[in-house]
Image 1 (tube, protein in one colour):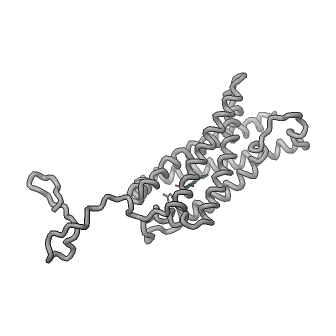
Image 2 (cartoon, helix red, strand yellow):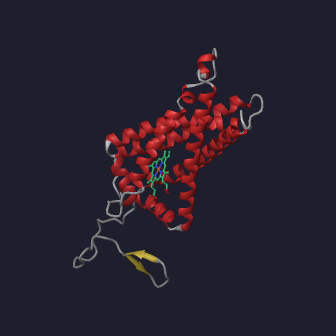
Image 3 (tube, helix red, strand yellow):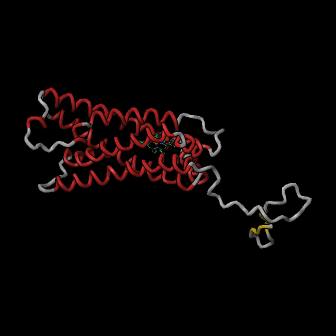
Length: 248
Ligand code: HEM
């Protein structure tokens, strides 16, 4: 292997691990979808309020994505040129797996997914949608075609991550004899756990079809107080002399 191809493989491994880091952060935030519109929209607003910091993170993420794709294409082309007959067909009982043989195809599907996904959720106006960004996501997932396409894309993501994660550690030379099996298992667990986490979201939207406000603890609307009041059926917060709030 030439120094330049080692460099490209190293860039592919490091950017791949950085993208796994992004996915873990994105997944953690997205779990708030299950808490309802208020919690999720507050989280999205908090991110938006980071201003320049968020823009810098987004530019960095885009650069990492592009570097990952570029290095992956170059490494694949160089491998093909150096080895016109596929490695796995030459090896009896070779170590290649379905995941490792389909990395370029799964990568291309994920790229297409990300483009459509960002267009659908980041660059679509959600100001006038009931439930805002949360409502936009849940409306999309209530559509079986979108939800099933998302779930299929998450299976492809699991396949890509489960091989890519262990392969990155091997490229970075973080394997000692006997560790390879351990990384393979870790890759399988981490890759499929991340994919499964994302998978639950379109599944939830499709099956539960939650509505905005459903998880809020709205004040009881059954007890009437003042018949002359326009909307007397609702409890109102009253500031007491001690500075505490009581419901009247
Ligand atoms: C399936 C469950 C997923 C849900 C519900 C979801 C939800 C969202 C939402 C609501 C946004 C817009 C955030 C905003 O405007 O503040 C977003 C952005 C984004 N998502 Fe996802 N996402 C999911 C999976 C994924 C996956 C698997 C990937 C990558 C493979 C991904 C990559 C991105 C990227 C790159 C952005 C743009 C981030 C930014 O520029 O700030 N998402 N996602």
